[in-house]
Image (tube, rainbow, N blue to C red; front, side, top):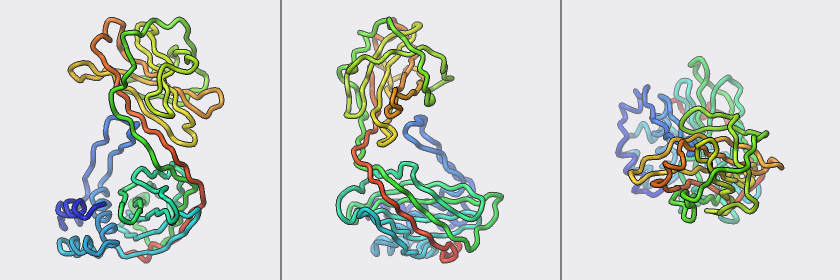
Amino acid sequence: MKTDKLADAIGMIDERKILEAKSLTVKSRRKSLKRAASWTAAVLLCFTLSISALAAAVDPVYQILFNISPKAAQALKPVNLSCEDQGIRMEVISAAIYENEAVIYLSLQDLTDNRIDESTDLFDSYRINRPFASAASCRFISFDEETGKAIFLIHISQWNNEKIEGDKITFSFTEFLSQKNMFDEKISGLDLSKATTATETQKPESIRGGGGMGPVDYEADCLVPIDGGILSPVDGVTITNIGFIGNKLHIQIYFEDISSYDNHGYIDLRNEAGNEAAYYSISFWDDEKVGSYDEIIYDLSPEDIENYQAYGYFVTCKNRTKGNWQVTFPLENADPF
């Protein structure tokens, strides 16, 4: 994170709001595949502590925050506990308690290579062990190009609004993904006008789930993959068939090795006015249960598709690093805010 960006963010902080924040929420984006989520009342506090935690590691930036809000700057004190494996250092930077909320900041840094970047994802391999009933999450916050550190926020909320006092937390994870690529543009080579009525269909057996803009019909007939597929807009993603079933357009996408690399995405169909066609999707495993098919079913008949173009959003990964990282640290070392 660059100093000027931090300064811009810090300029929005109001000390009174930090102390009184109780009702801030942020709307999630409509696309669930982009993994956005709405935040609760603790978000403003967590965001503010995020700025101070990161700033504490960079003297000039920390001084900027201190000049604006001394209390925010002093809320987090360094924990400075770390572990190393596979040439990767995990460090717990700082922690703080605010009534029944706890926030912990940690960093990942590659000491031998360039496996840590702005796309680093702990891939749901992390565990947050704590001796009290609570909800917890871990989110990527930023990547500092100068130090090569990826910063993560752990947010813990104790149940029944009980205050968190003097307990130890153990954070651990066993793998992470990085060097991700994002495709977000028109799919050249996919001509919707050539779609015809499917002559062969199937009912998938190993269904993983579904989603989209409306109710999902898990009993719907699906396309049969064409050997070799139709086209591959990006490595790891193949459009395996397209056709009409029951007067609805189906597009089938295959994502390679999702269990290891979390390849995922979708296809939007947009008309000349930029309006998206309504759709839902069904996801099902391949025979080896390694890769996954997404059957996207659009509410479009053959007469409707003339003015529509296909736009893809795909996230693929090239690097997966396994190891064993674990740090236990006491929350009593943090100053209540």
